[in-house]
Amino acid sequence: MLELFLDKYNYWIVVVLMMIGLYIVIARGNLVKKIVGLNVFQTSVFMFYISLGKAEGGTAPILTGKPELFSNPLPHVLILTAIVVGIATTALGLALVVRIRESYDTIEEDELEGMDNAVVTTERARLGTGDAA
Amino acid sequence: MMAVDHLPVLQVVGPLIAAPICSLLRARNLAWFFTLLVSIGAFLCSIYLLNTVLETGPISYAIGGWAAPLGIEYRVDASNGFVLLIISGISSVVLPFAKRSFELEVPENQHSLLYTAYILCLTGLLGITATADAFNVFVFLEVSSLSTYVLVAAGAKQDRRALTAAYNYLILGTIGATFFVIGVGLLYMATGTLNMADLAARVGPIGGSRTLDVGFAFIVIGLALKLALFPLHNWLPNAYTYAPSAVTAFLAATATKAAVYLLLRFCFTIFGSGSGFLAPMVGLVCMPLALAGMFAGSLAAIYQYNLKRMLAYSSVAQIGYMVLGISFLSITGLMATTLHLFNHALMKGALFMALGCVFFRVRSVNINDLSGIARQMPWTMAAFVISGLSLIGVPLTVGFISKWYLISAALEQEAWVLIALILASSLLAVIYIWRVIEVAYLKDPIPGRTVTEAPLSMLLPTWALVIANIYFGVDASLTTRVARMAAEGLVGMAQ
Image 1 (spheres, helix red, strand yellow):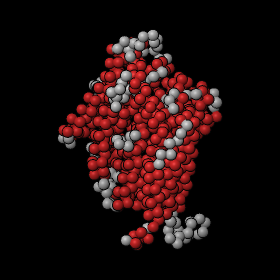
Image 2 (cartoon, rainbow over the protein chains, first blue to last red):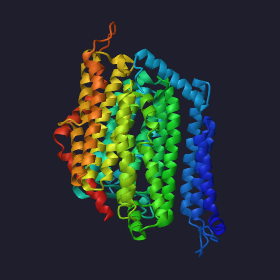
Image 3 (tube, rainbow over the protein chains, first blue to last red):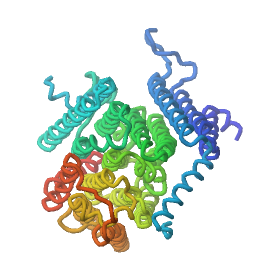
Image 4 (cartoon, each protein chain N blue to C red):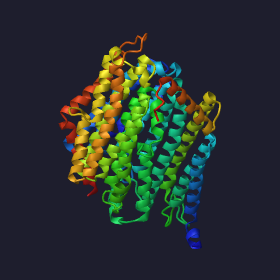
């Protein structure tokens, strides 16, 4: 049991980080904290890609003749792209949070939902479609 | 090589380069015209490509001259050629409509940036469809998604709920894309390749591998979030309701379609010959969810007072039909899905544009505000009714063709219960379309309100899609030929 953990400890770290990240996204009501959770979640995937390309004792295959054992550089390159995508997502997400804060004056999910639901209730009342679910 | 040989990549790279140029064009009419040119250029490209594919077979393009599987390959065959045509075609029809609509719904200083986001979204969707590299798919998926969040948030001038809708879409969309990229990583771990044809060739011999199965499951769930398969559709109703009208028309007709195409690609081209995991995955997971979506979407649609939201829920139901077609695992089922991709783009595009026309004049799409509107806006409402009939699946419209093939696929497998369920969910569509007809045609106009017909620049694109709804419903020979080729190509590559 312990060996299962120690041999593949990199994947266990990935799984734990992934679950922590996803849990924050689901459980936290603060919009900024949700974005932080999303970042943790994405970072776990970066670590997953990077560790799967690593060969133990391997070198980097750059201009060093023909190494016997080398790490696969492709996943590392791929994850550079994914990191850039992650930054763009975070930036856009935070920009949206700023706009939300400007128009609603709060970034707590429950309060936002409450305000939106109040609008729906008044719209329904005006339209006389109270039966609508 | 001639310039024509580069078209598979030019179609994607063209808009990609055009986007930053568009952001520099500060005059909004110029930005609009530039976007229209880019979109029409992509449309002409896709017509040429599909035509070439139909005559001479799939086109393969190696980026930078690096041959696949090492380099990134762009590959156009009947199935993605058809989706390219849908995406660029709908974009070109929506843009003339978008001009007046954006002028009303979006602050003036945001226009050129909004058109930039529009071009980027188009780039992403075309890229997802054209590429044959699994990781390239993820990059374009994020290009299209990030620009979509911006487009949705642009509705904030009309209703601030557009901001929360865009935020929720961002969270769920990112989770979906990340699940997808985890799946791609697991595939790479097991096979050591990212090229789709190469993946397909290596997945088969590996057979039953836990890594592959888990990777496939991650990919399907990630895509299910992106295509809004019930119950992962939560982001969709708000995003479609509060986005500007033209954005909703464009997204409803194209964005989920690209994700459905990806699902087809991964299920059949890559995993078709795989571990035997496809059948239980699709049969036990996708089919029940598709059926649940068909009913939950339609039932929710009946109870909406905001008509944009009503159509958004109806989209969830229509996605159910597409996934149901996939879950038959037969040529006819795949044809039904491919046809419905095209047909649903025509009908939902037309319906959302008709609502856009209504909003342009009435400044509301709540059902009670539309009382007697058909007398004041007869052409708009006629467009709504015809495309609504198409949504229900009345003969002589494209909706009928979709339902016909879907029911044929069920008949082949003698799945009588499914046929009954398909017909029953179509009846639900009758109810929510009839609600609108009843209010718009049979009630008296609201006293004191003088609204006139929508401007021609909005009405003509709407009617272009309505006429396409009827044309391809009467003469479906072209679309069924392409759909058959696409279905056979998807299954054939797997063998």
